[in-house]
Image 1 (cartoon, rainbow, N blue to C red):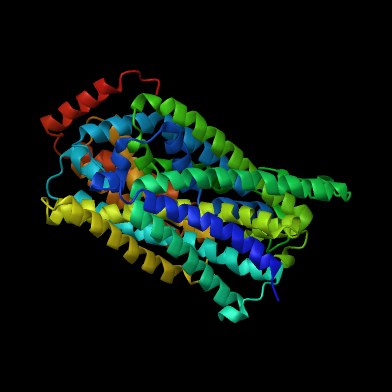
Image 2 (image 1 turned 180 degrees about the vertical axis):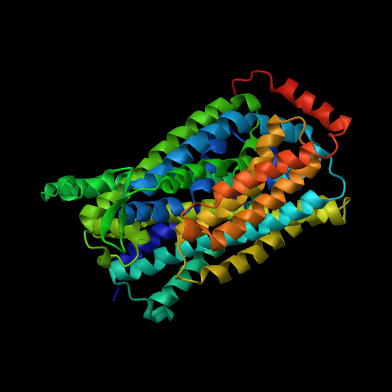
Length: 520
């Protein structure tokens, strides 16, 4: 017997997958050098740069983690996180984008963040490149696993929502469907990232970003129309759910006044933007630095709308699913809401679910690309074989995509982990490791390579240690102590070691002069 639910959703998925793969192979022949594969030859349109940066930024966390947090605890933690992210997005585009585009070009046309830091400070021993690349691999393997996990959650949820029978394919339980979802997502992402590189990733990111926003706005609005038509009202929800200063505690069953740590931790997410190696290359790749303000406007509109819609999904979910036991996992709220609203139209539901896949794939592909460049460009070319031909580096990048994906798949098979928690750990890791170094490196002439190295090591270690042992105990996000420790390390080490060489300060002066209009 034909399962029309499976056919409808499957048709939407197949169209989506085919489009992504086509884009990858379209750019395969156009990708001839490492610069093309890693940074697209610095020819990115401002709108594509904006959409690609934000789509790769938000990930499956936007459609699963953030709505789930709002549904489970109310607007407080989710709201402060969203506010922090919106502020961080603006500051990143306002103060980092144009400067980074100009400085990376002057610093020997640096293609990656570790390469830029090395060239910015003329560090000749390779310490920065090696250690920065190691941190990139650690955090991105974890980060990518969160994206594959989100894909697995989506596919396993579909069986419950639609009662789809896949026993003929050897899939008889939710665990099997989860694993199948992880593998399918990984396969598609690897396919177009492996073939098309940066250009393919940015174009697919743009498509996926539009799809994500469409899904986030449409689903809760239609749900409200249905619910209000049946007499439902937000008045039936405890008003403290809408408060930024009260948080629901599931253990005690009551609302509690949020701590200062909750507010500070939420706002601290914004600092993470300064150090994300999968977002910053979009700044480096913009064709004309003077077009940054256009990109900033597009990025801010997308971010504000998408974050607001994601939190709204969680709050509307309180009306649609008043009993959390119905969901089982709060991070499934968007998936379950889509099934409830569009259950009778599986093809449309499939398109909405492609929005989740878009969030997953846009981030995973960007992360795989950066991880591959860390191996081929930062480690192999800069430390092992400085004269390596482009063709060899290109294939080292592609093979790295396969290896990192395999490890991320293995980690994602742990169904007990939370998408939100995994992403928050990796986000903090990059903010503490690279955010401080990038920020001070762009604005402080006196900073030297010893300070940069100290900032990377201290920030990375504190983030990993605090996140593993102290975040749950103190309630303070590891971004806060990690950033403070990294900033102190940079300042103190730079002050108590030799001043930068003249060629370093001369290049800094050239970069400052090239910025021109400071209202970037």
